Image (cartoon, rainbow, N blue to C red; front, side, top):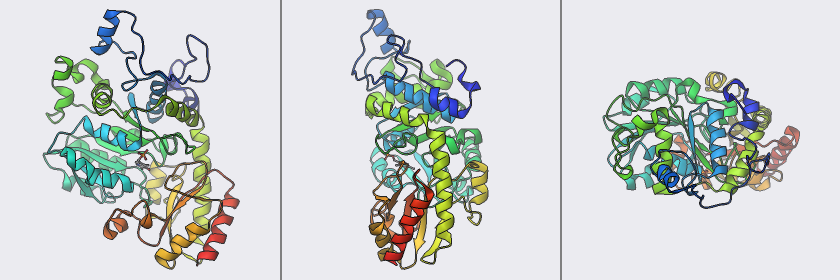
Length: 429
Ligand SMILES: *Cc1c(COP(=O)(O)O)cnc(C)c1O
């Protein structure tokens, strides 16, 4: 599509990373359902394996359909390169794998997706990666928790489910003063509503399972590098700046410059950990990404209408949507997500745990399930489901206490979504 940087966001959502197929002329990206790719000759094979040329070897490393999708996500975020993975969780693992060694630390927001808190706090410990959780509402908390062993700072742009908007610029500045990158999980707003790299974030991770693919039919994750972080500024990132034994002494930083991190994520991360995205899921996600700006605007407009309606409802104690003018995060939302504060938010019912579960049980249009970012409206009671593994203290600090109901507002008609909540609240209360 020529010089992609000159096109607007909607144009890039449709075109970035996707040329017509050079052999068949197919206009839609073909699903390249092939495990491996034939080499032109022995020199070609050797050059590919030695990372002297880019090309396709084996679909655990790269695949044409997956490549097209990762180029699109990287373009939409304003990064230089991307790596797609089987899920959002594996994207988080890969993003940190390039930076961390056993005994290292990273500082993470305590207002994260519940699965991320469990992944960071329990499973990553087995790798010797130690997380320190802090409240992101005061960015200074990150500074206080950084030590000589810290290799990264991790936060969500919009936090699920607490309705928290993080001050990305302040958090990124603190990370940079300590010589470490700021990693932002941008799943909730998607790049259509929030572009953290423009505010100093260095690495973006996504669960593309959610809004980017957008139709609740394809698991996936992505890691995008801004290309702005200088890995050689200190000796913290030896995996990138020292010669790599497994590639005959190749030095990623010297060889690939701003692409060093992305090449590492493929050539070491995907190669050795193995969470590759399937071509079919890449295809579904590319198709989804084409309508991302249209869908996100509708999601966000509907969410605001529903949040305003809930706020007036007698059965509801509070609504935590950052797009509401009385939200403590309203001004941060105006700065970071001026087109809308996303579609996922929580509200608190009068009557606590039982009423919360009752609302979920009585909804008809809403689907009761553990996902967000579908075209359909979704509902769940986090304390009894997604955040069940956490202690009550952790639940409350993550915005998932007993009275909390979480919504992911779809792209149906706002009146129908509101009518469904209205009848469910009446029955449950
Ligand atoms: C769902 C989600 C994840 C995990 O992604 P999966 O694709 O389910 O592995 C991480 N972060 C956020 C904000 C999410 O919503």
